[in-house]
Amino acid sequence: MATMDNTKYVESVVEIELNWNTQFVSQSKKYWDAMFRFSFSLCNNKTKAEDIHQTSLLKSLKAFQKFVLNYNAQANSNEEVDSLFQSPDIQYHFKNWLFRIVKNTYIDDREVNKKWKFDSSEDTLNTISIEYAEPLQNDLYNNTDDLKKSEKEFYRLALDDNWKKRLDQLNDRQRSILFLAAEDYSYKDISAILGIPIGTVMSTLSRTLQKLKSN
Picture (tube, rainbow, N blue to C red):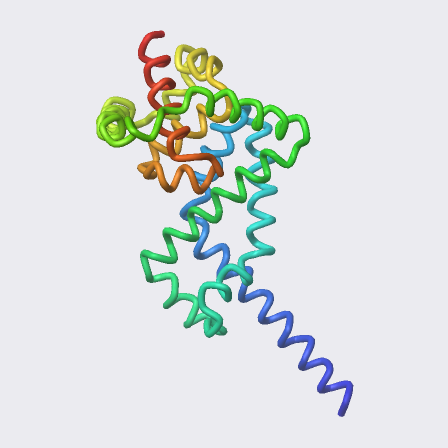
């Protein structure tokens, strides 16, 4: 009897684990392409981007159950998780969470981490002062709108040699900010995902767009 009970217990544990895995695929699959494009924006290398993407998916798969239960500890069935993910709020936080995992996976490399911090300090030196933030922010929103209108297929065009040369002139932080802006993220969201001040996001995006337009 004990053996039978243990067998049922193991089967139930496996079933729960498989359900969480299935749920992760179901809820995250629509973001996989965006996660890959974000990976590419960070490293500007297709092979490395694939590695970052795959590692990020594995990390997020392992942490998915914790993410869901932290959001709602009562979500203990497939039906409850499905219902939970009908909410735009959790979709918003889930996508941001996935992108943060991609960014953290990228900077896990020691040399990349050093470079990221160096670029951060360089960008901070050029960050706009708070007194000018509000009027410049409106102007930057217009720049972002222009980007979305004129470069709707931005990362498809990035594969073109001319665009590739332009992107090669940008550092990883500039590329990632530009990508997230093109993905319609707000300055606040970009700041949270990349872990940098909003002022740095705004000033870096402005200089990056000017640099691309001048070349």
